[in-house]
Image 1 (cartoon, rainbow, N blue to C red):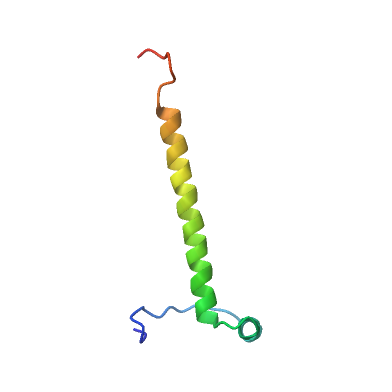
Image 2 (image 1 turned 60 degrees about the vertical axis):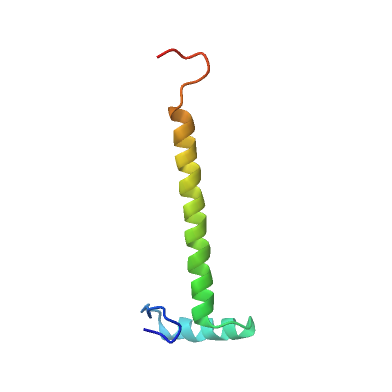
Length: 70
């Protein structure tokens, strides 16, 4: 458990990429952990929006059109 109450996660990234990523994040004024968290949140939010849109489109296609008799 980390000090902020969220569990730590392990990822496997080669040393050269990890070092360069650290330099990139430092240049952008962030940490690797914060950058990874923001990336994961953005991806999950986009995925959730896509799912909601797909559910809405399915619901609309399941509705009978005006004038349809069942």
